[in-house]
Amino acid sequence: MSMILPSPKSDFIGLDDKVHLATGGEPPLLVTHRNAFETFANDKASGMKGYSRHWDVVDEVREQIAFLFGLTREDIGLIGNTSEGIIKVLASINWHERDNVVISELDYASGRYAFGRLTSFGVDVRVVPSTNFRIDCKQILNFCDNRTRAVYISQVNALTGQYIDITPLSINFKDKRTILLLDASHAFGVAPVQASLADFTVSACYKFALGIHEGIFAWNQARQPEFEPLGVGWAAAVPGEAPEEFLLKKGAQRVEYGNAGHLGAYLLRESLLYLEKYGAESVCKHARAAVLRLTEGFSANKLDVMTPMGAGEFAGNAAFACSNPKEIVTKAEADKVYIWGDNNRIRVSAHLFTTHADIDYFLERLPTYFL
Image 1 (cartoon, rainbow, N blue to C red):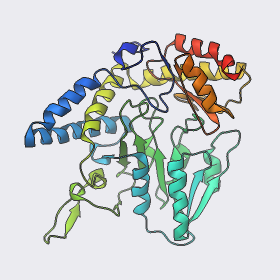
Image 2 (cartoon, rainbow, N blue to C red; image 1 turned 90 degrees about the vertical axis):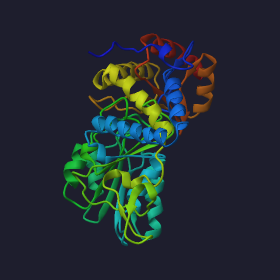
Image 3 (cartoon, rainbow, N blue to C red; image 1 turned 30 degrees about the horizontal axis):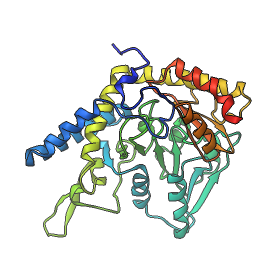
């Protein structure tokens, strides 16, 4: 049976006397992460047996992620960051002039810049305009054709907070040579991740998953059986007959060129066990209820709400357009309210520790931040 939400703020480091609404940027760490670090440190001091335990924990984390993503343990790799994962996918593709890739103008810079780099190979980068801050999968498909090699999309848009059901894209690209690359950074830990519908999924660990600055690479082998990264390292392969020969490891471990982030794995294991106690569905419902109240409050203050409010179209972030976001953030911090402001917008996040009182206080103080 799942525990009751909201979770106690005392379970987190540094949340005393704070209204923390900035998880979409940086979450607080758990008190139990201190124990996880001590376990890691003790294993690190235990020679080869301790090093072997590091990899045991990495494999445990693969299992945890695979369950949440609807994939298998062999589909999951642990990498340095999301941008690294995007590049690993793109570098595995044999590009030709007049190939094209498709991405929304609203999507995250990691995807936009990586796709933009492909112009040097003669690839046409097609940037899909948005309407009223909303990404429409049908419009993305209108920009695709038989030369489209890759489409990048975020499960939850980092700018606006829109949750995007990728089912129409998944159906359209099935059994085609178009790679569907999903970024789950703002969904992992708070909303359903549709990794089973994408060819590849990348994600940060340091947002709603309550981890630190490392990344996840998921290769959906059931949908995309062929994947050979351009790079290789000792951890990604097994020796061949000659010194310079090797065979890539099976599954997503072939993207782990060296040691996975062992400390990050110990911490993420603790985070995912903590989230599991409350249940993924309950955490999502709790966060969405808070975001709904936030967007209603933004509208009541006549702000330009960026987050779509259709059924199932939002997750843990609410956003409104703002010409002076840093000033608003500074004023909120004076009230010990922590929000995120950049890219001409304010983003306010809710997670399992967010209370009704947190939302009430922020919305009460919000009008004063514009004076």
